[in-house]
Length: 531
Ligand code: GLN
Image (cartoon, rainbow, N blue to C red; front, top):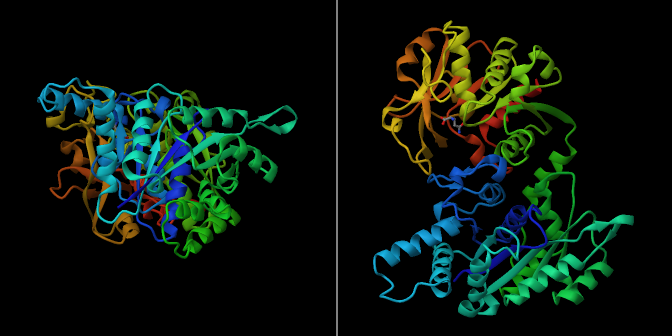
């Protein structure tokens, strides 16, 4: 039977609960346990697919095409845990299911209520993951902050796990903030308050992860322990670091987090195997070479919008023992400026990430042209590949008004357009080409060399495609269409001929890159940028 570890958050949001949960998963795996990870998002949206990246950060896509919270990306990068639609739970999904059952008459005339019907559905979704095969520990991260109205049913369901499975099989880890006030003094009061709000709903945390500017000393740990009733050894200091998030499991482990969890859950202790992880973290931290990558996009002011891309670039850095410096370039600024080259003066490579909507497109096209002409390493992902096609059609085929019908529905040269079957879909949620599918790579191409195989499987999230009727023309003009779907209809990847490294892909390789297994396209891109 799986044990359950719940991770809640207190005081305020953005303390890094996702990374904390993922780090715990990482540590427990390093002790040889089979771990599963679940993210609960208390919002009413059915999934993250329709949410604005400005507000919510990146939409992360799983193999089976679920559009989820970006924390699932942290889980995939830190652990081996298998993720699918089942691992991302929202209030919207829970209510949708309960209302469906009610309409089918499955509640036999009873009044349908939050307790027990909503909480039962929440427990059913969580245990469905815990009961897959030989899972030892299921980690459930509850989004939001304790005290939010939305999270109450989830916390109540979590409390019932103690009742249903026994205290010895369920653990509560609470991430909280120990802020600094003037004179640099650390304050424990917010932590005391957030633990008492948890207690009010019947949950006594077993472990506290305390975010603070600097490490907590023993006196501070004792004080927190006394006020919150959490054993002093289970008060873990989660201090700010300026190295890499991948060091966090190591910091937790040095304070005995994995040992404490194993002990409290009554599991048999096994030797720790985290040597490889430690080596890669410290070799990255100590790397001397620096690669400067420009990301040209429109969500550049918000750090989380391109989360998986940043991480995959760091993994490329790990593979090449080089530190990555990211420079965000707002494509609208580029559009307005008369000096495109000025933006890329101290840059080693240019990446254009995915995106939707017309804003900033012209700036991206200029960046792509600049990279092609000046032989700059260029990596176009999804929208970034479509940009390459538009630029090529305009400047090489001389179709000056070439565009995607997403940005100009009436263009004379719709080099990027909707598939006919997509054309009259009106609904927004879940209607894109989503999830993992196959691509066949052409021989003698750069991408084929980087992957080292002909057939690859990558995740997708897009609506528009390179228009079939322009394939031959683009190829004749010199653009290499290097990868196709198995039926040869859809272009999956392209590259520039006579260019050191110019690749565009319709899929999202960033979602599957891990620090322990950097994605070959990101390793290759960083390698080329180093030169
Ligand atoms: N907007 C483009 C499309 O829908 C690209 C999507 C993306 O970059 N994820 O095809």
